[in-house]
Length: 174
Image 1 (spheres, rainbow, N blue to C red):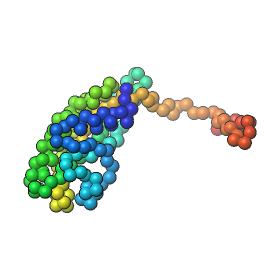
Image 2 (cartoon, helix red, strand yellow; image 1 turned 60 degrees about the horizontal axis):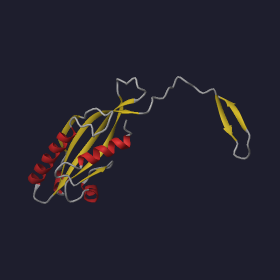
Image 3 (tube, one colour; image 1 turned 90 degrees about the vertical axis):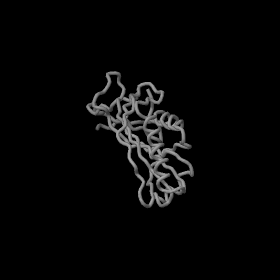
Image 4 (spheres, rainbow, N blue to C red; image 1 turned 45 degrees about the horizontal axis):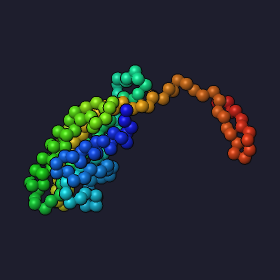
């Protein structure tokens, strides 16, 4: 039963094993050419972005929370050999990343196989002009967490307030 942190680390560690990928980092910023110059290394890498998710429609009877996670991986390549070569290199890596992700459970219990939602070219004029190619892979995956849903039907009737000045406390009706 993974935590979100363990799940994200397992994905990152596995994606580092794709041939041609030099680094994998979590990222949550824009992908403008000026930002890419600061964050992207000269070789190929992945900027992984947890996109959120929601509780699954079907919940297990184990007290766990089934959560449908969505994640994106921006495959970023940089070279000066021209637009066509950059695009080919990024596309090849993106396909390899996609194949690594599809059905992967990252070696974790209570994680369903990943399902690819899309693979698309995100290179644009300015990004390409600066020597970058970007492809995006987005996938969805259900994980079971050891967290129970909050029961909102139970409302507290009393709130206990402890005094910081002394040892007395009082009950405040809600």
